[in-house]
Every structure is written in structure tokens, then in C-alpha cells.
Length: 112
Image (cartoon, one colour):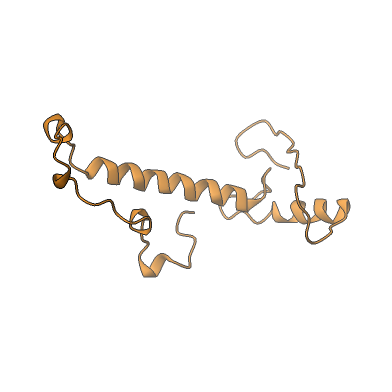
């Protein structure tokens, strides 16, 4: 493949579970053909694009998380050292901690 940022380095894959029962040649052909489908590059890439897309989505998620944490007010030591348990708000449910995408972004790859 063409090294988009410099020296090319071959990728080594390990198959952990193969539900489709691919032969070695079939799997190599699938991976080779998928490497031409990365939207950010006109040349083949070293990893299959879903790996790159997962990395891009995780990076974008980290930026959103850091922005959200940075916008929250800092807790003072006096309020955090209070022993009055009635002043502690109930914890949010697990789902409330997730970030919500706007409906227009739910079915598109906005992170590319």
C-alpha cells in the first residue's frame, strides 16, 4: 500500500473468531479491498477503514467529553467536605451520562 504519511509498514492481523468461515485467501482479499474505501484518502490505507473510523469517533468523543467537563463549575473544598448527606444530589442514571447526538447526525458519519 501507499504510505500516506511516510514510510509504509505492513499490518499483521489475528483472527479471533470467524463466523463466516473465510479461507485465508478470502480474508486477505476482503481486507485488501476494504483498504481502498477510506474516505479521507485516495490511496489504500494500512488498516481497514472501520478501525480508522472508530478511532476518529473516539477522538471526537474525547473532545466532546473534555469540553463538557471544562464547562462544569468546579466544586469547592468546603462543599465537598460537608458531612451533611442530605445536601448531596442523587446520582444520575447510567443513561443520563451518555452524550446525545442531534437527530440530524444520528445516521451519518459526521466524525470524518
